[in-house]
Amino acid sequence: MNAHAELGQAQAAFRDALIAHGLLIPMGVDGLYGRSGTFEEVIERFNALVTRHGGHEGAEIMRFPPSISRQVFEESGYLKSFPQLAGTVHSFMGNDRDHQALIEKLLAKEDWTAGQKATQVVLTPAACYPLYPVVAARGPLPAEGALLDVYSWCFRHEPSIDPARMQQFRQREYVRIGTAAQVMAFRQLWIDRGTAIMSSLGIPLHVDVANDPFFGRAGRMLAANQRDQTLKFELLVPITSSEKPTACLSFNYHQDHFGHAWGLRTHDGGTAHTACVGFGVERIALALFRHHGLDVKAWPQAVRDQLWG
Ligand code: ZN
Image 1 (tube, helix red, strand yellow):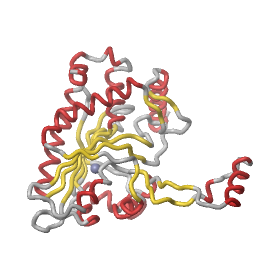
Image 2 (cartoon, protein in one colour):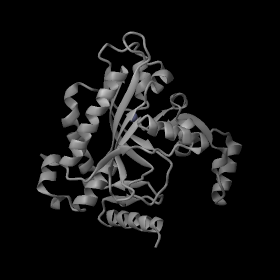
Image 3 (cartoon, helix red, strand yellow):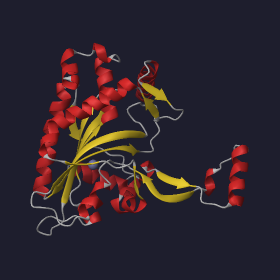
Image 4 (cartoon, helix red, strand yellow):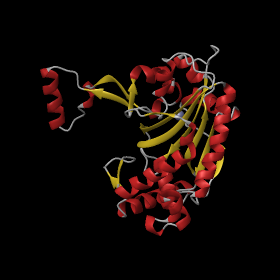
């Protein structure tokens, strides 16, 4: 068996085990799952652990629905990098005759979606996107900059049998907005903290420069730029493969990209820089199940103490 087939088999086996134990609930589409109470409890306890490490610094909490406006989505520049991952919300906007045509197609089991029109709503691709225009609208930042805490469902269109590559999942993030020096210090702090948090859970890991799936020919340049300028690091954990470990945390430096996109200003009128740390909470739960077993009651006491202590 070649390496690709082996990886696929490992992913399918882990997914099937998670489903057999009732931790994930299949929904008929690869990458779309319900979660059991136990799975959710692990995620809630992990989120609380993150707050224990980062909640004392006064981050402003913002919670958004799992969608952003089409305008904000366009302004973010996401379509330049990842058009293949975006999910736009479409709805029926026709008249009685159009409705009749839709019903006929549905009954004939033909494609009924051609008449659907784009709404003003796009599924959130990353948890921090909605907050930048909100902060920008307040005017220039104070000298100390801004620190925010977001948690959102996100969508990426990449159907896969790998349970660690879901189409809809949650990201917990801390986001720093300020000068380049402020946001770089924040990112280093969270690379250290994130490593400490995951190590305390007995999870094997390493941190490396990220390799995002930028789209197309122009994307190869963006990917090279991301690597050369070390704009993004990931904390990687072997879940279904040691050769291809899964990014469970990411540490992102956006330079002044979002500052320009939404007019974020520092206290002295400069363009603000931004950085964020993102926790992929489903992937972290899967890493825990992979390394400590599918029965949380049998997890090592030290790990249980961290989460339930
Ligand atoms: Zn972010």
